[in-house]
Image 1 (tube, one colour):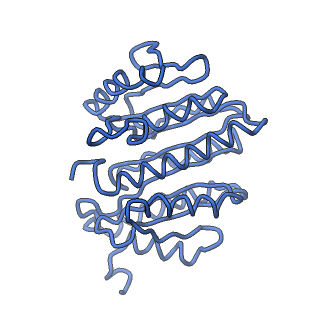
Image 2: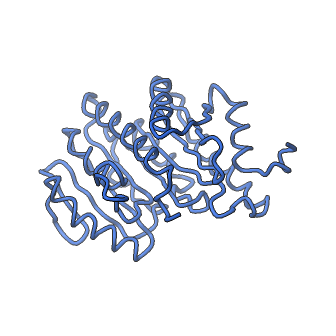
Length: 278
């Protein structure tokens, strides 16, 4: 299966559209929000599969499309570490952004009116620059690596954002067994628990984490959403709906309010049956 082109991909992109759509509505309506900073830490090649609409079927397209609707300044930062993939990303932006009325400013920068700026960076999302974030900035981060071993959100990312602004949401994908990652040593896989612990420890009291895993999935893909407490029921319903649209079901649990189920789901994702004693 080509990377980023599996049967799970349409559901994931539908979920991204739902999450970003919610972000647009809130950022647009809240007076305290003066602008937005959106980060795609693993932008990929920016190519939509099988001729599907670009603005709904790859993360750079989804961000570019929705950023125009905020009505306030939006900085979109796209990070891609692999040289060939980055070159394809830029070529895709050159091809598709003009149709959304973006103008190219330089080799890796595009603008829509004076409100939206999109920048493509050839580098790791783990080095994402947060210097543009101010107190009035609402932040959304996408972290969609090819496998959990390529997790691109650095350990201090959430804490750094929290030091600058109270408004932060995120979506990370967790591919726990693509290409047989469960064959890695138990010590290596225990590091995956630490990845989530870093997110948990960075949470302010008004936010929670939803861990959602696709049921009966051999590659054990899961999704970690960081959401405000007051939106929990709405965003869980959005996640379930996105996967149901493509005939997939998820098992989901919240860290703060469903911790036993949340911890058990982590064990199922990160440990083998023998290690769990099943």
